[in-house]
Image (cartoon, rainbow, N blue to C red; front, side, top):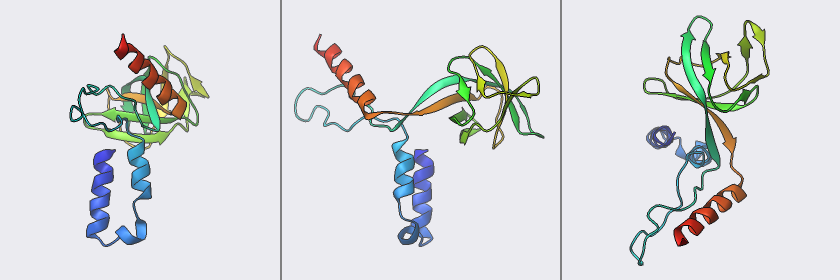
Amino acid sequence: MVTSAYREARDRILNGEWNTKGWKDLWDRLERVYHREWDSGFYFGEGLFGINKSIAKEKKLYVGEVIKFYPRISVAEVKIIDNPISIGDTIHIIGEKTGLIRQTVKSMQIDRKDIAKAERGITVGLKTEERVRPGDKVYLIKSVESSDNDINHQLIMEQKEI
């Protein structure tokens, strides 16, 4: 996502579109990526060793893996290993050759019957917007409450004091 946003910014500048399209949509895309707060490292004394809170606005939860892909109908057979997914959820499908696909779950089936939620332990047919490959990982994308980040940061700092 970061590479894509930087590339699009570069293209907008080179094509003279920076002043008309701006940067806010690109900044929003960058804020979805997991990253830690900036710190000064060891410059002012003891560093935090990279232990600081995430300031990302989204988190990804592992769902499962693509088992098979049917290109004619653009459906992936996905084994749900951990977190369930439902119609309307935002997911990422990530693979070495696939890259990153971000999409909303619009259609899922088991034995040619529509379902609204795919639970852990089942295999589901998931309509995809692009080609995916066996072995690609599927993640559920959830918004992060700022209080979640604050609680995680507090727990980490308490552990550091022990």
